[in-house]
Length: 257
Image (tube, rainbow, N blue to C red; front, top):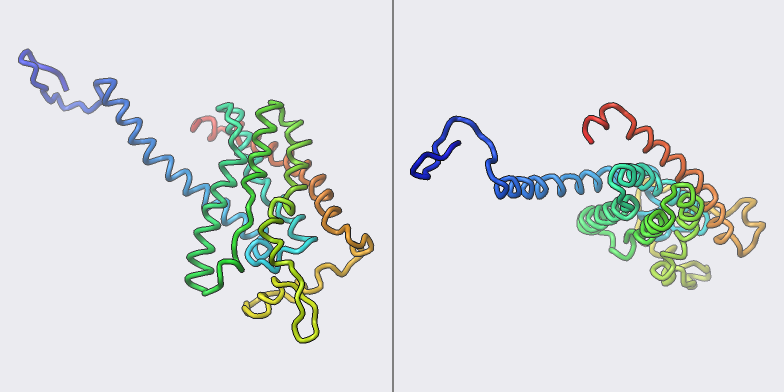
């Protein structure tokens, strides 16, 4: 494209963006196309990953016990914040890996619970509501922003990440832990909902999940599990940061970035 003497554009057979305004418009159009696709990709990846590793512990309100749910969840939840957190900080200096990935998981979880569990399978939403984890991602990112060190972020942020799974959701979970009596048997509201809404392929060990040596600590099951999950999550976060480091050093990643 060129301009003739009478200021009328003449097509020379070459395509291109000849002005800054056209280039800016093209950049905006590409961003509007690519960013939603990236968000959908993150939502799908994290939702599939979380469903495989945590699954029923986050699907049903009666599965959110004091022992396994606070232990399994942070170990699975830290994977993508560690990998993509390293990528965003190393390449762009953006401490957003934890918040963005967990936000994508939260959006995907709410869409899935409402469409699949509530509308399709007819479970009530207060039986299948997704837990809240966005605050955990904020803790990781704020710790990275303040310390600018993956070591201290893993040591303090990773430990707090595992420690606060149960307290962060307690305000929502507490009404379902209220005891009640049914036909002479003491049980919680969550247990009653689990009996009333029959689910296929639910293993019976969920009913005896706290019968082990951990019970010798008495009422301290939840704090002990939370502290243990925090210590495990320190090493877990550092491991996935290392995986992110290996990913950024790969040849195909360097060509893309």
